[in-house]
Amino acid sequence: MAPGCPFADHGGMNLYLRLIWTLLRAHFMRALAFGDTLSQFWRVLPNDIDINLHLNNGRYLTMVDLALIEFFSRTGFLKALVKQGWQPMAGGVLISYRRDLKPLQRYELRFRWLCSDERWNYMGFEFVRGDKVHAAGIMKGGAVSKEGLVPTSAYAATFPENLREELQRRLAQPLTPDVIAWRDSEKALMQRAQSA
Image (cartoon, rainbow, N blue to C red; front, side, top):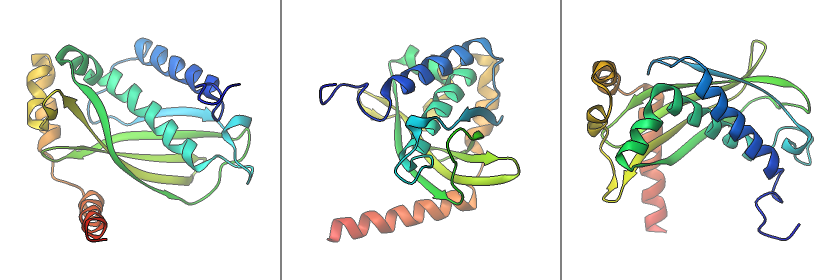
């Protein structure tokens, strides 16, 4: 295929099929509360692997994106974003790899909302097989309007009244220690980059 074709890169057709499957699954499954943990079960396919014959490190983050889409859909965030004309945006990710996932192995991806600050929502995730954690991390994401990043304090007004109280409780939860440490390391990283 020609360079630049979306299906030519790392099994793009397979990723589109996974996206369609994720959206269909989200549509037919029960709604999630904001504090629930989402579980997805996947298998390492041949076009997921790299030259070391295990799940490609970049593919982990693609799967996290799919979990985020399903979480947003099943909690009502996606509907609220579309209604307001906002767009979801990832602001960063921290991931640690511990054990590899080999071809055709089945694994579970667990995804949940940890906490939020005035700008970002922090989500935790783990790739699990049996009782072993193969990779774990944190991602942060937000909503963007034409004016820029939407403050998290503006979210509640976009949700139906029956969900606002739960959302406000979630937004008011304190930052977790791992998120605090990550924010501090990000500040140091950006300071170093700006002084380079």
